Image (cartoon, rainbow, N blue to C red; front, side, top):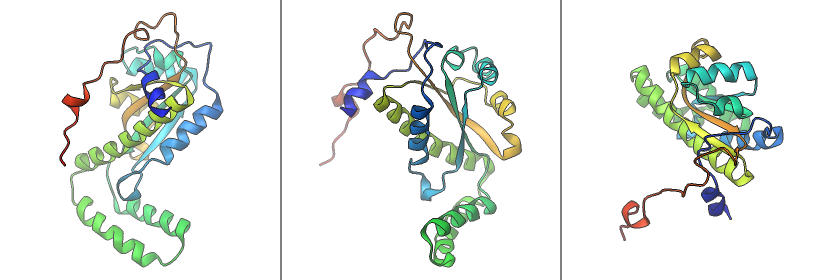
Length: 210
């Protein structure tokens, strides 16, 4: 059933603004993203769920006029940490201790290894690390939406500095990484819908090492 839903989904090109996605389903997609795995459980990104029509119109302009951001009902912007800092790693430790209880020192000692690897690096390298974690969340969001029968369009085609400005991300120490638009396909007017899904064959895509 799940694989059938993945075959059903596609990067929707034309959405129907008269058919917004329910807040219940959006909340389920958001929860799937929140539950996605990340490197050492850091979750080094935030998501912004935008339903405001005026803000979505601004985001569309920053995405070269892609209309799905306007015609869809929700836009999720994945905003990665602009750097990994001592404060941010300590906040991860705080969450672990708060949720699991126990002594702080063993958890902190574990994250000392991460500190040693990440803190000396250039901020741009750490942003790329954080952005890759955000893409894991994107994948979970896409899969959850497909299972719910909700249409989506993942997007890299936008101007990050402009999106950062619209959402005030710099003040939060964040930078936009990728966008997920949520809506309902306009079945009569989407040119991509009747097209066959194109994927490489199993033989050309998978190498088995037994």
